[in-house]
Every structure is written in C-alpha cells, then in structure tokens.
Length: 88
Image (cartoon, rainbow, N blue to C red; front, side):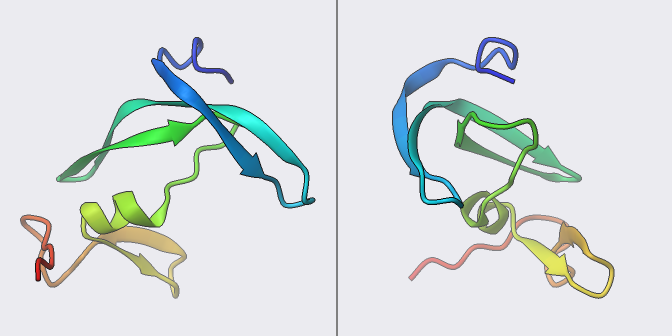
C-alpha cells in the first residue's frame, strides 16, 4: 500500500533501517487517528509493507496492555473507562 491508497497526507520522507540492514526512505504521513475499543490517539505513520504495526508510543497514549497468555492487546484493566497517564 502507499499513502495515496490509504488517503494519508505525506509530511516528509524518513530514513529507516530494515531488518536485513538495508537503509531506505519511506513516506511519513499524518496525522493518523487510531481507535481501539473506547480509546483514541493521534500519531504519524511510516508507510511501508502491507501490514500495520502499532508502536509503543500510541499504545502507551491509549493505556493499552499486552496480554501474553492470550496473545492479545486490551485496555488497561486498572483503568477501564478512561486512559491513565503518568505526568511527573
């Protein structure tokens, strides 16, 4: 897929290092709104490949947790109604 197919606005190019060590440039698009259950956040996206990968920052922003025993992601059970953030 590309940014045109996804209807995303390209902001700039980003250089990435792939798993095989090769470096390439990819479109960086945004803002992208992510919705999961009762959670929402805005982030940017590097457009490459054909599978979405959600990074740690949007997961933290939406207060999501990984449940290894079920191999799933869900809202934090300690804050089921609204996302909890830490501000120090």
